[in-house]
Length: 367
Ligand code: SF4
Image 1 (tube, rainbow, N blue to C red):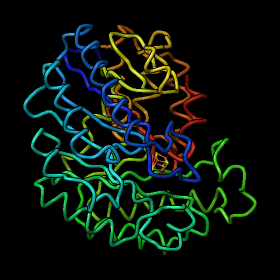
Image 2: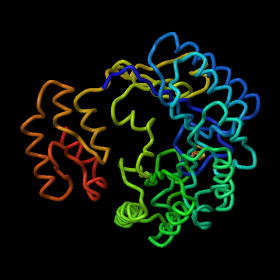
Image 3: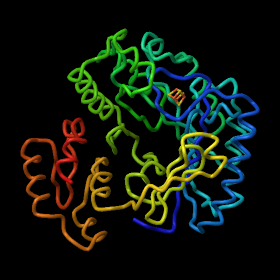
Image 4: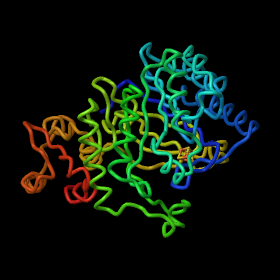
């Protein structure tokens, strides 16, 4: 689990507008906000470089919408990480971007400083669904932005899509997946829409025709199968990629590798400790860090490994904790295996497709 490598996550809390389903820490900002925030980030990068000498092999700018800052600011942020940390030559450096940012964002500039992966939150390729989601981009925007990213020499592109959108059907999901496949991206994340409290969708749910639980489950199972048919292997509950294009940064979360979160609301797992910045720019400015206790416990290990399609290796578990899993645990996994929710192969336990759908409740039974 612990090694000398480190992933750095940088949170940019600004977006052009607030999406009706979004529960992330994000808000509208202006030029002055951006300038101040980038300075805070650079100071924080310097501060943290004095706290650890681990080698950085992934950097991930998430949000919010990091691309709203503009290419010069993104360049500055990555440059400061490279200046203060020991960053490997082949580090995976990802930025989340707005699918309509093509016209406004200089991808060539950020490629110069090493950015080599872009994640676009397209959510759907169906114009009716995009309208329902309050998204401001069109299919053409996505196509143009992908073209510009590729023209800049960045081939590792990921698209986020969503399941459970009001009035979504298997046909419209197929249309979205076909669209993604035709753009020849390397990675697709497919998230089930959850009605989070405090979101516009949550407060106005009666006004929308959300697919019910059965329908959403069918959409999930269909997406796994159809993505697989199109060469995208599932490697985590919500993540699919062409071989070799799994997100190295996100894998750190599930493999309990060290990562440092810099920015408002950013979470860290470093040297066995979990901590995070408070959920406001003010908290970040005042370096308010909330201790979240010890990480990497047996329970966490089981829970996070089971999110991966490769699952939980019982041998690896023994190596990590110096003991076998309990008899009770083995009995339970055999029961779920017989019921078709868990697969057991050699020394590994993993969820089947239908198991992933109820993974939360099974995991809480197991640990
Ligand atoms: S763009 Fe992303 S982070 Fe911003 S409001 Fe929409 S879903 Fe939330």
